[in-house]
Length: 335
Length: 273
Image 1 (cartoon, each protein chain N blue to C red):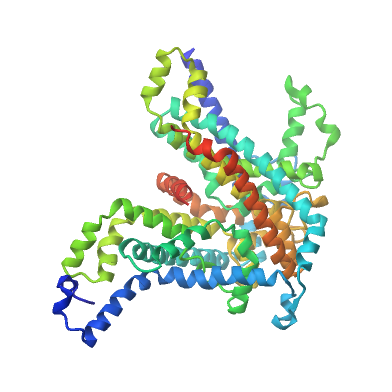
Image 2: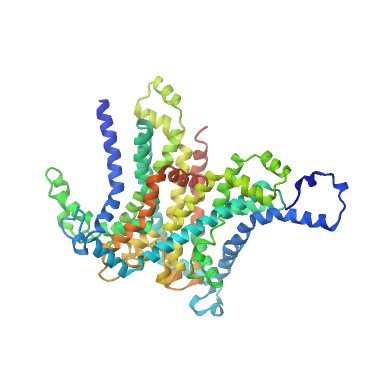
């Protein structure tokens, strides 16, 4: 392309001819060539759409009717979005699921990761970790379909197990209530639907968190535990006072990921409710799910754009609150 | 005492493992049963004899192999494009100083904060306006130069390639493209592998984007096709479960052989993203 060694020559020796001007131009364009994929794709598929969605949120528009049917309506989309009880219901459901799905995930993952790192090593540890990681790489749709059959009311395996437990000796008494409430409609009752969804989320993401926390526990040097032992710490104290504070940054990071992910939860509730308007009583209607309904089932694109911005605000507020209260503590954990 | 705690430890782990793998075993078993068997009491904890019948039924309710090929095509194309584009951009940001570089890089980082849900409507309308709705191109191309991927590789370059090396190559007369292609790319292979794993798995499992972009059944991807047969009347669950199981097999097989790389890649991808 060009002889770069020439560029090292003092400028004065070069005649400011046409050829060197072209060369200089070409040289200044090289970096732009390399970053052009990002520039083009970003402008076309991110920056422009984002701007357009602000514009669109002030319009009334049914996309099926074509671009000409667009009509400026001011803040009407925002006002009617805020007026829709389903929006608030969906935000409530999202927050409910964020708590119900995230807290167990981390409460299970942290001790398991600690046990894995502290008492096992090599292939055995890897086998356990890898197996529990598998749900993370499988598609949420596939997983949700499987759980859809497991939860099936009449003869799903979950209900059958509960029935079997109630007839077992010794522990049967604990489950004696089961036959009376059969069939348990896990996905067909508004107060059971959310826990059923939360369980699938916990099942899918706990393994991922175990891997992150294992990485965290592995950064703690053995000397620290030895020092604690010399000071008379028992096993529990080593976990609580030595290991746990050391992995604070990892906890902060993993929790942040969980929060961002669960605020956008869509596939699990969508498949578990068969894509049917958020399930019975809209108990499974999450924020993203609601957005999908407004945009693609009710074909109210303007309203959906307004809802997107409301959700954006909501996500931004939740994340900032999390960063404000936990950020400093989380990030400075190692000091 | 020591033995006892060892047994307790393995018991805890085995319970975790059992809960984890049960749905996989169950879906594999259900794929071999008739709808009646699946919902019979007691549940059939054995391999059934309806596999071929289910397979025939699966082909009846969806063009399974076409759909599988679609998923594969989109994932492969998207992975190749992402590896190429992201490494090019990362190289541009790493190797050169030019006007506006910091501004563009800053905008790129900021764009990672935008939640995908906000982009759903506008991206859809843009694709519609460009006339590429209901194409596979619209699924793998727009995200190919992702901020996340560029950032991941740019960080790796900072740790693995010295500026002296780039200067030396320049003095030796290598062209800009040659430096990128023959010197930088081979040195950042681990980062490229990480990116490829993250992108491939993401595209293979993607559901929301296909749901809003694709409308003709012969263009569907696996996730979308499986979900679309969920609510047909008298769903042949044996066939659907067989399809679900088959759709998971490629990634499960890959995971058996490359579990370390995939776990490292997916967690590193998350850590840096």
